[in-house]
Length: 184
Image 1 (spheres, rainbow, N blue to C red):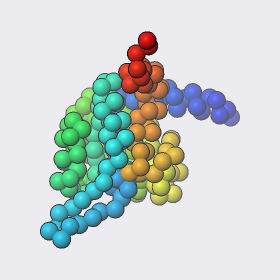
Image 2: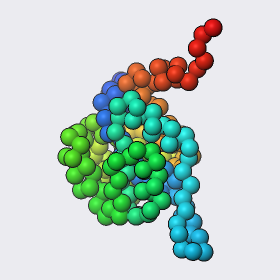
Image 3: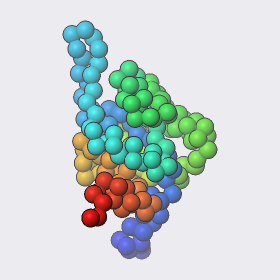
Image 4: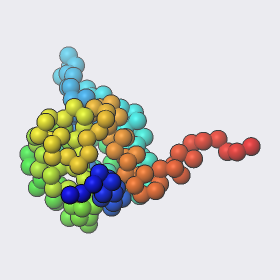
């Protein structure tokens, strides 16, 4: 029977292999609520630390993409702001769409992490190298995930995962040092 240390080491190795991070939007990059204005436009709130985490991941050579069941102009704007080139919206079959994304990017399932929160994410979470459930995901997604974040969706969960990915690569300490003052 595998020990806790062996399981941790195996997960660490899987994290270190990740080249592509794919995320759902509602309930992952946002808290899951949708606000409509009187004019009929949709509003979403994104956590700023998730955005910085995505930028740090990209600067370290990682790729990021969005695979979501809903379609929204707000999501496209946020993706453009963060330099996310892979944006698949209005997706009915996330497993099929993710397989196509992997083929386009030239990465394997084992080199892919996916962060989700609800049943449409379940098949991808079960198939990819590192399946992640946010803390407030549905029970079936939490059960299937290799990692369950401490933070809920829309409140820094994506950043939490990115830090784990960068630590597994051995990149996190150098990133933190860039934000510290130079020694006198």
